[in-house]
Image (cartoon, rainbow, N blue to C red; front, side):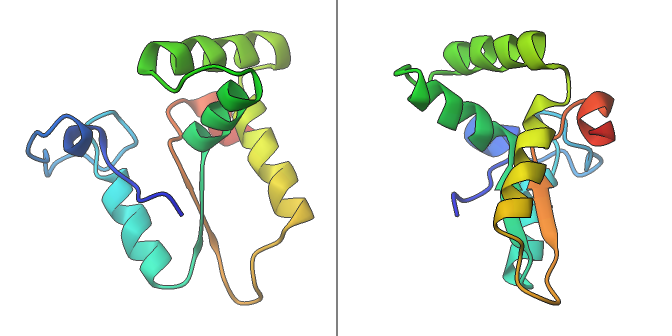
Length: 113
């Protein structure tokens, strides 16, 4: 599992302790780490975008990933990343009595998928 990092960690900034919402400066990465430590299985929508970029032979720079994510949503709908995670979970379900953490959800259509 790739260590979950919140946007503020990646930018070298202090956490804003009022946010726990999946925003770029939220604590969702911290929550993911805690839940994984308790036995939940980790998946990230951002990892889906990175995998797609790799499949296309592209780098993982922020701008590239934004373009790839936007292209996927334009071609397959707003929930494409969540749908790909759901398909992965159908193929490889988590162990019994375990749960799943899905990180990097940034918009309601992704939740609805």
